[in-house]
Image (tube, rainbow, N blue to C red; front, top):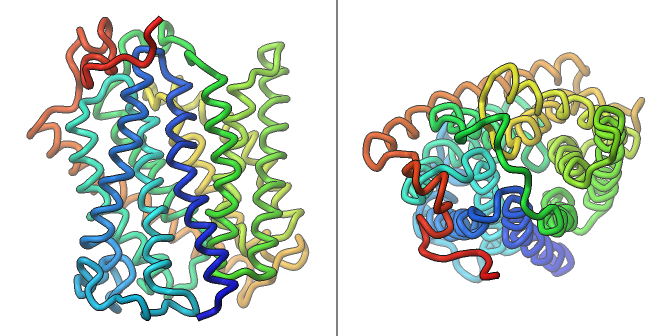
Length: 401
């Protein structure tokens, strides 16, 4: 066991959990109306608990155990055979389990942004549990657990495919099947507290260093470079989004700034361990433009109420970073270099994006339709329009003024 690496991954694990609780929870809660704040927090909180238990029971084993091309096995259910002395590389396997658990926590929590303010809490619980077993765990095995994409040499350092593509595609599917909020898009209320959303976004930014730099699984030069490019991409995307917002609307909005920041972080994630600072800058600026455009495209052209822009920010960002990873990893852009040609690597990246997107789309659609038949998806009109989900679903209120 390497004590320095172990210490860094212990810190990184805490940082990644910070991204969901309280980071993402506050970010999303600030962006919804005041009568749905508590429900949004509750959804993020319970997902963290469900994902943790499922990861312990079978998720880790399905993702990281076994030599199957498409699925792991269940030999390590309930972490069977893992004890205090077990190692994964040169860190304790218990720590690797916990580090990867925090990724399993945040991925379905990201999807919350697509269905806030109108979904049944029971549906959230069922969709999350089934999705983690049938979508997240197999895809993780494909990319990080020695599966078929790993054997092809796909590059996904910290989750552009595993986390952001799966969450983004699933968000689009759920939002489409669930249907838009009443009054979408014209009379949907603006964010009730950009202040709370900014605090959550800032926690996401800090936590993302554990997400990307921690994925080096060592306290080394690779982790340091991943941290640097992550920060540069976030800053560049924020500025890009702000300038576009300023030009189009006449004023630079805070909500636009923090949305651009998240887009930059999502986009750099798959490439963060392979690129240099110039690559981080390119990804940040490009994500600011492309993700901004997709926000309008999803709402206006596709007419899908992806409420907090999960697909446009996370899905598109993760795909963009994955596709550009091979090019920006070359020495020309200050990257670490490739063992093959740019085009050969990009073909593998395209195969990864297409296969994971299609698999996620199909399986998520089936999951959501099954859950709809069992418990339904949507709250009543009274709960959605009058009471709000805070009181209607949880019997509590966010604010007592």
